[in-house]
Image 1 (cartoon, rainbow, N blue to C red):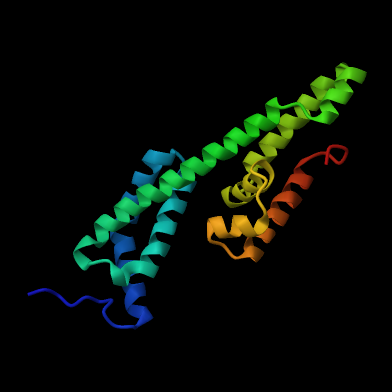
Image 2 (cartoon, one colour; image 1 turned 90 degrees about the vertical axis):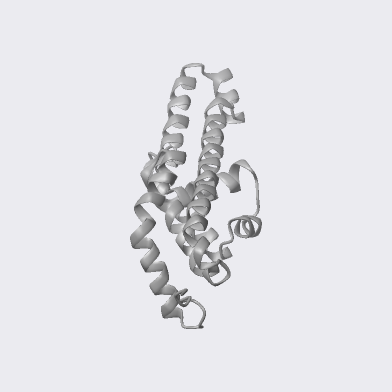
Length: 184
């Protein structure tokens, strides 16, 4: 005889209990699977967390005998999305380092000795961006490199506009603090 589906009712505690049960059973394996894709334990944990958040929203529509498989398939997609986003961020940072700005060109023509200093400043900025939490790096990359508006970023990431604006503000504050005053 089949056991009753704990998510048939509308009780949110039943969903929370199911998520907690599956989390205790599968979280370690999901994180390991995500790590195999992203090669970063923090990003792997983020992929697993996002998977469980999606599962909590959709568990009522997933047949009970397919839930574990759904979790493993979804964590793969989440990890791949994080990896792609990380790769885009790295490409942005590489372009920042390689692409001369008008300031660089002007100063190089006036004083070639300053070119080395400017390259060091760009490298410091690159390192500072990499030191940001992933969520803030993502916003900076979409806003600056891909020149997207905040509303578009919010829609793409399925986040409230206020969250996107806060993450950008926090990222800029951290970048300002990480650079010497004359570079900021």
